[in-house]
Image (cartoon, rainbow, N blue to C red; front, side, top):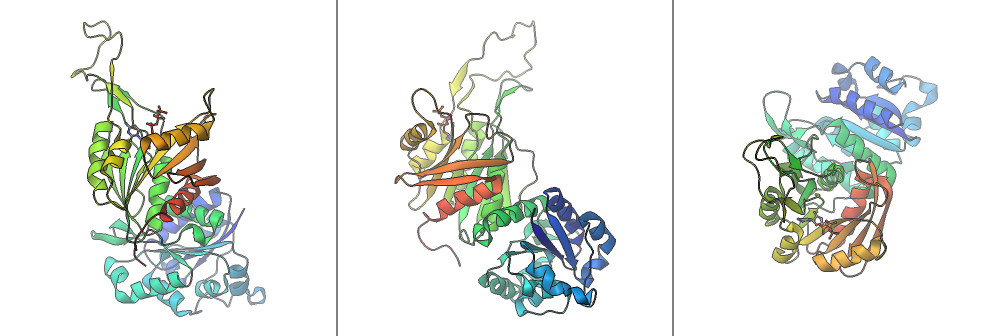
Length: 408
Ligand code: CTP
């Protein structure tokens, strides 16, 4: 159990802080909510007290003998400020201590994650951007805001990411420290395929697979948090779009191939985490195949799908990295890594992320562990952790191989 301070500043997105609080307490953490006085215009202290089980105060004049503004910051394992308004970012950057939250920020030794939410103009204003740069330079993590609907009918960058995304990233920082979310992908475009393709047999049936898309979602979320432009080619995944990510939905291997090859043209990194069907039915019936009808099949004839990873390798631009995934089991011919090394050589990609699926270890599970093999022989073991923590380990291995300047 970790001690998390959830700072809430005064924006309409403060209502989502209650959902984030729920997600953090359900993950087993002890959460102390520190709202600004402005935040309490949007959500009452009673809501935060009830959901956290801890008292809520906004100023340094309550419980004076307890010296709360020092103790809360000093004893925290993580501070998450969500939403972080333009005003809160400005006060934090200036080192003010005019309420309990800003005072807590000055006494915290632990990683601090700011999750901005404000109107687009306020986010893009040079004053706010300078404050964000200052906070990042000092080692705080400032997530990019989501793009989407704002308070009124307007839309643009400035939306608070969904509570589930923030909770997942908070877990990454708890597991790996602030170093798990550096800005090492800023200025990079990454394309990630995720999920599992469906190959139709008739208008209602398909051949599919058990990929949940969770690892691909985590890769997208973490890449966005690390500053990348992210395109997620998503095969049949029912999950909310991660913040800062453009989703291209696809269904079949052929659709996935077209989308990935198109998007790859502008990409610095392409990650093939999707489970692409190797085969598809040779023909798709135009109408439903009925029992007892003349069209009732006795067998399904299959044909090979194109190997998208191989095509990406063939069309790779100079400096572009192509990352494959492999789900392997050991067998009489060799262990997992022997098979994986052979596959890396066969596929010709730059990195191969290897999952050991010997005992149903990956599909649908919230955690994972992988080994990243590089074409130059380097081996990086990413230890068991949440799929987001594993994603962070994979991106660290990828970022180390990106040539040329990104963007500070
Ligand atoms: N892949 C692809 N196009 C396909 C099939 C797979 O791009 N038609 C990609 C996957 O996204 C993954 C990697 O290739 O990155 C997996 O390699 P693959 O050889 O398909 O794995 P297996 O099916 O496990 O191969 P094998 O049966 O040879 O072990």
